[in-house]
Length: 266
View: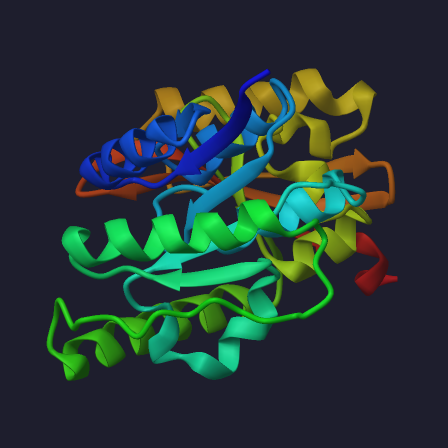
C-alpha cells in the first residue's frame, strides 16, 4: 500500500514541486492550499507525513500544527514545518511544535535537500529519539532586513490580537472559524482543536444558535451597520457579543465575533 503525504502551502508552485518529488518516491499526495484545507484533509483520512508552511492565509501553519497535536495526540506521522522566514526567528522554532523544520530556498537546492531528508526519515522509526531538528540555512530570497521587518510586523499584529481585552473569533465567508485568541478559548472553555474549522454557531448554546445565526445574517445584509450587540448563553455561562463584518478593501470576507464574559460584571 502506498504511503500517504499531506502537503499544505498557499504557494501553488511549491505544492506542485513537493507533490512531484513525493510522488516519485512512491507517495500518494493530498494537497491543501491553506491551514483550513489542511485540517479538512487531515480529517478525511490517515496520513504518513505532513508538510505544512508557516505563513498562510486563514488558518496558518502554527495553528494547524496546534490543532493536529490536540486532535491527534497519538499520531504516528511526523510534521515538517516549512518556511522561508522561519529560521530568521530561531528562538521561536521550539514553540511551533513540529517534528522537523526545513527553511525554504531555491527549488534546485530544495530538491536535493528534501530527498536527502526523506532518505533519513524513511530509515528511522517515528517518533525518533534523537530530537534533532532539520534546519537548512536558506539562500536569502529577500534581503535579510526585509524579512526581519516582515516577521516583526506579523509578531506585532499577533501580539495585538492576543492582548485585546476580549475573546476574539474570526471566520470566513461561510462562518467557519479560522482564528481564535487565547482569551476567547478561555471564555468558552474550549481548545483550539475544538473551534478551528467549525462553524461559529457551535460556540453558543444549542438554544441560542438560531438567534446567533440571525445576528450574523443581519449585519451581512445591512452593510451600513458597524456591529450587532447581543448577550448569549454558551456552555460556560453567558457572554456579551459584538459581531462585525471582516472587511478587506471593502470586501466582506467573514465575521469577527468579540466576546466578554458576563461574570466580569457581577
